[in-house]
Amino acid sequence: GAGVSQSPSNKVTEKGKDVELRCDPISGHTALYWYRQSLGQGLEFLIYFQGNSAPDKSGLPSDRFSAERTGGSVSTLTIQRTQQEDSAVYLCASSPGKSREKLFFGSGTQLSVL
Amino acid sequence: GEDVEQSLFLSVREGDSSVINCTYTDSSSTYLYWYKQEPGAGLQLLTYIFSNMDMKQDQRLTVLLNKKDKHLSLRIADTQTGDSAIYFCAESMGTDKLIFGTGTRLQVFP
Image 1 (cartoon, rainbow over the protein chains, first blue to last red):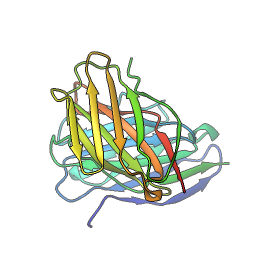
Image 2 (image 1 turned 60 degrees about the horizontal axis):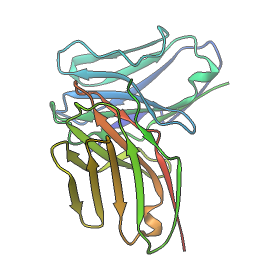
Image 3 (image 1 turned 90 degrees about the vertical axis):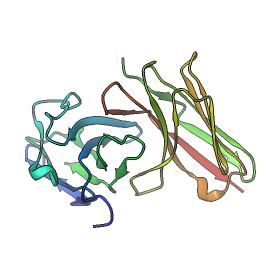
Image 4 (image 1 turned 135 degrees about the horizontal axis):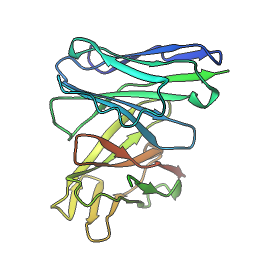
């Protein structure tokens, strides 16, 4: 596609359930990022993939959060046993190679945990 | 620590200039960025500046960098209602990771 695509755009779940959020980066982009945007707060870095290198997971808030990137393209962010404080907009971004001049962001997934 | 700080709100009259300020912590940052987020949308890159530059101008946008004080600003000339959005500054750390500020909500009134 022409841009970064995220699905679903909205997700409502019950506390304790697992959720999977998907990100389709721009074709050919080797770098992929996940950020979390909570109401009234900035963007919180979660995880970063670059090519075949080991991902930078330093921003994952707990072991309930995990992410994978299959075949260097699509990425899935999984949150296990969701809590109400996980409610936020989860944003994915990609960039070509190591070019940090421009990240292309998706529109995000609004996660609401009831 | 990795703190990028911004004021939360700015309100300006249409036609005036807007100045959005940001302070960052990592003196080794090589790039500093300004992103814009319109309601319900992802972030879009507005402009960026290399750390060896003091100023960059791009049409109505002027970025000023004070490396000594680790201070970055974005000036929008002739602010329009379409400029109303949240503006994020970001720094690149030693790796490729970008650290974003809390965002400044700019409101433009007629």
